[in-house]
Length: 257
Ligand code: PT1
Image (cartoon, rainbow, N blue to C red; front, side, top):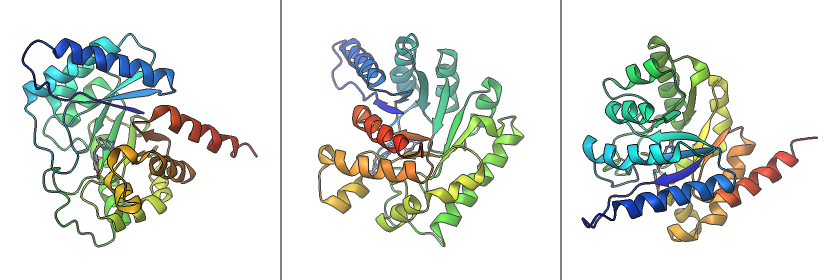
């Protein structure tokens, strides 16, 4: 899964077209490099990020879904808003990636109606404040219990297990210690009987370990991608598709006895 962020346009001179062109070219490049899924995000959920209005998110996401539709990939939309989910799915998106695990009123209904795959992610708190003081009794058990309850909630809305994947939400209300435990015990989540998605690419936990800035975290990102694959993750959400695809090829080559 390749990350495609649509950032707000700071100029009001019509260069929104330019932004869209750039995003389309980036999507094409990631597909050529081996991405099966393009994850379009119109709301930043990194630590400290502010909320975005429905209107703004729709403006960012829907035109991009329409322009990427013709490419050879699945389109995932990274959103928590039912209005954005519905508009994106109508525009041709194939999957919903929700860092709030369909907790917004109406979100379950939309995914149930369209019968599309969904990624349910765990987050403690909200992006703006989630890193203030994350606390767990037992991080593996707490996150696992949350995700299993969200799977049950989905099933009540006709979202069957074959449509669901789960994600422990690296960096979403977690200390370095929590993130490392989730990674080293990622295989614990396989017992929920749905595919596991892992998003670790360039995250601050890798900065904490290596001391490197965000644009210098490729090697660390590949290291954790390989660990996630070894623990059974089926989808890896990344910025660096070409390098991660090679990492995955090496991993798969070692799997054929
Ligand atoms: C993710 C993810 C996501 N991450 C899924 N969707 C982000 N399913 C957006 C940091 O610590 O892991 N899984 N959508 C990006 N969010 C973050 C969070 C980015 C933390 C950076 C950090 O640096």
